[in-house]
Picture 1: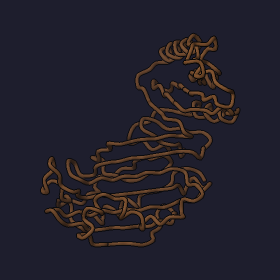
Picture 2: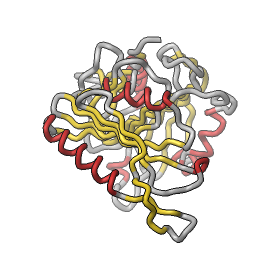
Picture 3: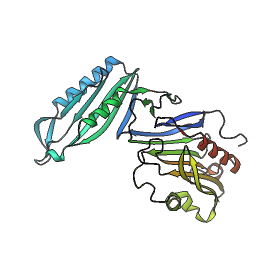
Picture 4: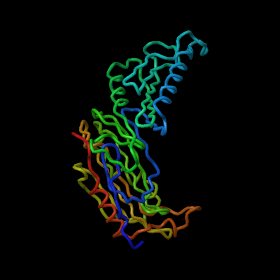
Length: 318
């Protein structure tokens, strides 16, 4: 490959961060949760269709009866629906239970619906028996401030980005974000980012000490691995550990880069962060060595890694 990997780059939004990626990048995984809620965008849903959908769902929850798990799951006279909230005219929240149980053992399913600019967002979570008004206030805030977003759109207000949308308003601490992308079409060139809020204890174990035991490719080629970089590095204002290796064997050359930061609890600009850039992979029955080997040389791989990390930055407010 004669051209550098990082050409025609544009900002890609991940949670409250952004990173520059080639515009031809194939992003094949996007998994997000916000305050424990899964989020599913449903395009092309009008306000009238939203009203029809939530009215039908509410009727289902009112007419379905809970079961008693202590009496062979016999039907009771208690409806599923426990609580309905209407944060706005175009959003609804349903809290419901499927079973009649001891008050301290109750578990509630939570469904949130919000329509914004022709997109319906469906949020799902669970509450324990002792959930309080703060839990309702948090999800109501989310439903009021959720809106659709194109893949390459980066909100200027620091909103939390997920696939198909963004959540503005008051920043909340709890989130999970996972993105995987292929930088070179049809070749092993995987860029992987995982993030979540940092918690106490995240920094107790050394990432570099455990990586060689956990990574399948490093284990497979343990005797054919050259360490290119190993040590500390600062990324987006975060202290991190970096490892870069050259792997050779079975007819392949691979350049794998890893970075991990435990983050700082309570600081949204410093989450628990893992970044990987993997050029080349182990060959298998479906992928011969000629296709599994790195599509770039060491200089190009290193340039791509450094460019990605340099561009990675926090967009939100502290």
